[in-house]
Image 1 (spheres, rainbow, N blue to C red):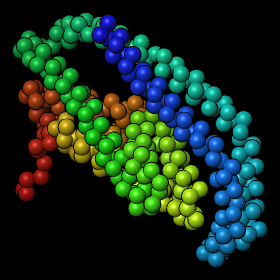
Image 2 (cartoon, one colour):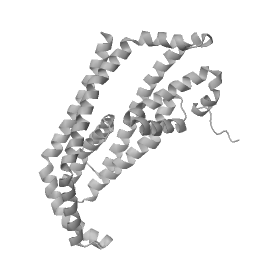
Image 3 (cartoon, one colour):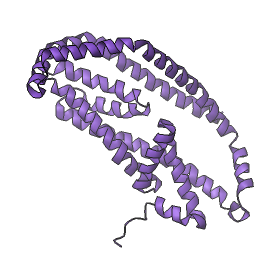
Image 4 (cartoon, helix red, strand yellow):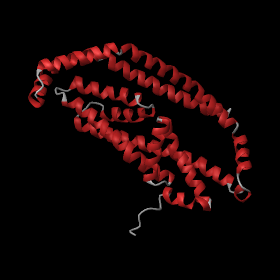
Length: 293
């Protein structure tokens, strides 16, 4: 019953996020005619600016746009196939992940017995302590990730407020928490403030500013905020956290980026107790580092 309740809560939260994402997309599509009209009015100004700044003549610009549109049309069927495959794969994983999670939780006692059979006698008494610390570490990882979303939301909101975008705090926080859904979340949630900037502002630089703000904040989140905040929660060095994110992304994509950090934290817990892993502990421990030597 406990396992079922936990899995059900997670599924409900995920469905709410997807529903919110669909609502945002629907608003964007509803405002599409106004956006198209606004962009059409800006087109002559953009062409003049490109011609003056980069020396690209209007005929050359039109030819390039026509070529891009032709390439898009030619590659449309291939794109549909990729989208279909990605959708089927995602739906399969959405079904299988709760099944795997339920099985892992239900058979956790079996996994503990398996570990006890592997561990040397001298470390067997320490195993329950290590397992407990590992569970607490993962809860700290979740808490650290939540703090990251809050910080990213604040930075997004401040940037949008500076630009004078309506409902800046709502859009900023919404975009931050939508990053839970990899790639698609940030793209679709960013479309809403982008739409508002296009419709309510008289200059094209405002939507460009929105894009630049989100890009800069995402860069900070991936390379500074996440490694620092989560590293503090897990007592991992910022360097090792950043390496875990990079290696996890290369090897397993988004899943690796999420899983490698708690796995590294568990390795650090083990290295705290095993004398033979002291050298690894020095690399991972947040208290170690440059001491002016």
